[in-house]
Length: 261
View 1 (spheres, rainbow, N blue to C red):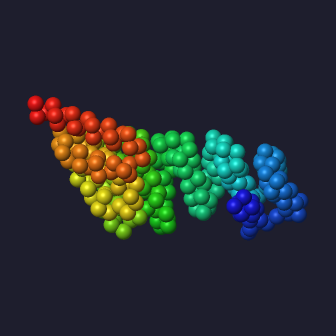
View 2 (view 1 turned 90 degrees about the horizontal axis):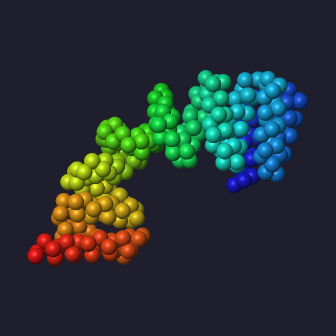
View 3 (view 1 turned 135 degrees about the horizontal axis):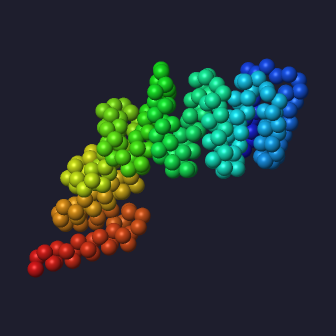
């Protein structure tokens, strides 16, 4: 995998570019540092090449590779963001604009948890015309960014739009998050209704178990203890934290005793 990444990085720079012999040699020299995992020196060499004012297409690719080196190999996402943004500033080529925006979105969402920025990244990606191949994924990530930024009404609107497309890869997931938004707004019955739809469509057992646990919580809030008890009991041997489920079952048991008195 490591060697594959190195080869791909080199190909990005050597493909479809008009190199002068000295520039070609400099690029190959950087590749040697990458091959031995001396990423700091390869970054230094790339920056030296940039000082020589290379052609714009080479400059764009070097900025992108600097973003990759900082993000993938040095885990320095703030510097990675800087170089991916430079790609966007230096080119109007849709290919590089999409690649840079996608990397910005992933870093902001997955690593920096900067959902305000990741929303903007994914929104831009959904606005490309014609629609990008990964349009559904970008829209789903946009909705998740809004949800994680606690803007529930707006997130509900986007998840509901995705939910209308039954062929979307993320169709079933929207039921889960529509339920979560109702749950967070203490609309227990509506949350349960969405999670029932989610369970009917979801294939993964662990996701179904999690939804049933949340449904149990919602039934507890409605004081429908028998339904809550049955749901908790049904996942007792499967839920990752058995003690949590046992605790809920005991709590419901004593509440029912107190109610009967």
